[in-house]
Image (cartoon, rainbow, N blue to C red; front, top):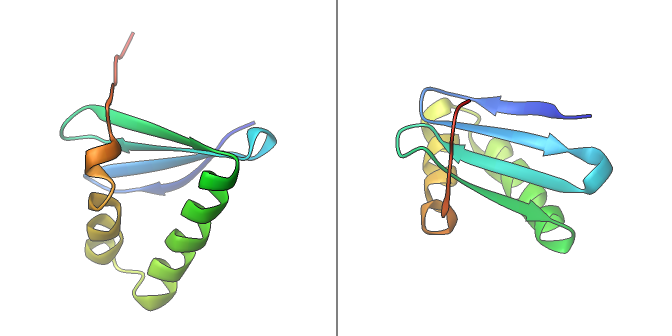
Length: 78
């Protein structure tokens, strides 16, 4: 089971609840990262705080942009 929890022009975030994991994809650079376990729990808490502070697309995209250095996996479309 997967849940698309965020989708903008620049990013999307997918939750894998059964695996306690999140995937963050930068659509512009076609790069992604995968957080699992304790790191995923921390990411979820940080994302919730960012959304609670300001739920605008610009703010959430800015928050996700802080993870760009971790987006090391190329995204391939088949």
